[in-house]
Length: 410
Image 1: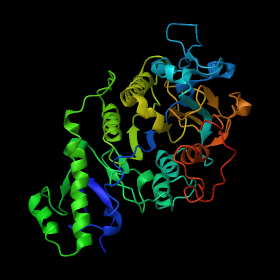
Image 2: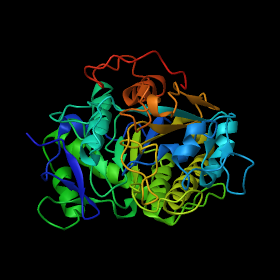
Image 3: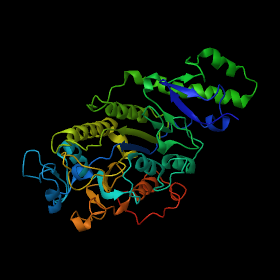
Image 4: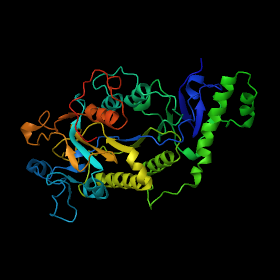
């Protein structure tokens, strides 16, 4: 039988063979008319410094541990933290997100992360994307397991899309998912060649005697036309949205295009890199500040661009682990443990920092050096899957994990 896996190669859709899997493509185009709930996941690869991203300015130990890297408390300087609740604040470069927090469309979970204590980027990212911390043998990702648990007849080939050069671990598995570098170059390529499939190939299906194969072949081309008819190459962001001119900003702009094109998008993935700042991290300005500026401008542009559609959208940020509490001798931070995640969208019960804060005093730290984890990252994932995407039983998505009491942000 023909494989159901679909992947992108050289900017175009590559099918494993010139045939199609009827069980999959028979569910291709039916969902374009109905608006559906969308989850957009953003992976901050490299382990963002969550303590300087979501600043615990009410914690005295934070300032004693970071004499050159700490972000000033609100009101102390021009580049001070942006107050959220009297204890936590945003890094000043995340100030564009403050209106979302005030509108209760943004929630934060602090001191969250993996129960596994690895400080290996590779292992920690793998554990987070498979949602099986400590288990290296897991073959599929948590987002793909969700897709399998909620498989439905209205699914299209664009149900799960990563705006990335290759399919991330979180979307790998039994269910079809796409990795698209540029949606303007989206098309169907014959396996083993670089040639775009044109009308001659379509004619072969038109002449097929098998009515089911005829239908699914036609639907495959209809799916490609879904993007072409949306005229995505001429896309102009709405409401004055201005995406940063970066790979991350471009990925979010294209996700907004797919959402508004009504092609059946349900799960989207984007990533932001270069968060591993062992040297010269900077405080209110510097390497971290530059990355946070890109992150904030990208997310705020996405929210502005989608407008009312954000009522159906949740954006979830994550990073494999945090940074050590104490700055190192190179004015940077080393690999740590606990971190912060952001959840943004219309359905979110925002305006609050969720999770139990463990404190930063030496005796309160994990291994005497890191922010302790008080919320398993799978609890955050499970609440999004259950509260936003509507999957009541999350056990197939998070094997071996019994979700804690709901955090309450959805």
